[in-house]
Length: 401
Image 1 (tube, rainbow, N blue to C red):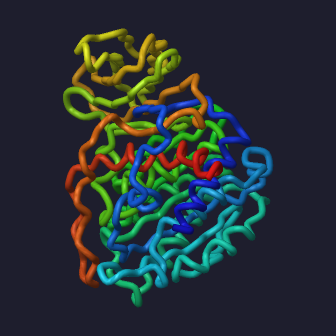
Image 2 (image 1 turned 135 degrees about the horizontal axis):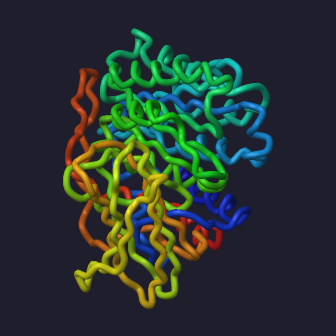
């Protein structure tokens, strides 16, 4: 419960410090109690047995882009979602975590060990230097693949918190190769890319991240890093947790996520409040032509459509006249395949919303407890993404208790 309270409070403080202005693609409800306590912080009941690397940018630009160190708050919130030795029940195995900082080079701040000791070390990170993302991933892989903690495949994840691309640019090759190496080892890699613009990492980096089963998210404001934590948890930190990057059908505010274009249509859900103004943006990151259609689910009708322009961008604006369930459908206008990103800006601050789909269905069963042998990636369906995301709005209610 302490871990849950910390996640709620840290999310609340970041929201109050910076009103939310950006993407969200799930339901909003007036009632702040949108999800059972058992779903907060850990994406339902986890069996543990995971190995997780927190790779944190400490380059000099963080002084301007994240002056309140909200990426550290987010990293600690994610760490608190892990199972420490003191929290293990009869059906669980403790998780392991390592914390790595990177700037011009990387260093292991917290060798792979019990999550309970990592937060104070994460707090010690200070900004300075350039951005060598690949060195951070490389150091994390070395920790996570140590022979004493085998196996690695499908129970291991790396989460990168960064505000920039590799600087100098020559470091990009290492970032790509280390992400690909992680994927080959069965390590799921996720990126939270804090940037005030719509720029993305190199397409080769995005492709490597998605192929690993991880999440690539462009984060528009520092406070939205809490939403990124919910996104990663909902997608699954490792193969033990959830199906992977293209399985989720929702987006969070302040975040645009990259996806592989599926054959046919690619559908995302959102429940709008009365009077809520939405701005939905789709960008083709590969040379593909796309159509975006906003649909009223209840009426089974199309509201508005648009196609990508010469720059590969399509935007749809809409103000909901009443509370309604919406679908955002992305489809190719040719036979191409590739990667695209989708995001949604909302006029409603995150503190006034509850990011939870209008459903009463139960979450999917979790995988069985890790027993020390290699485990295949869990491939069941999951509705937990929307439920977990509600942790952000619940923070407001938690501060009033």
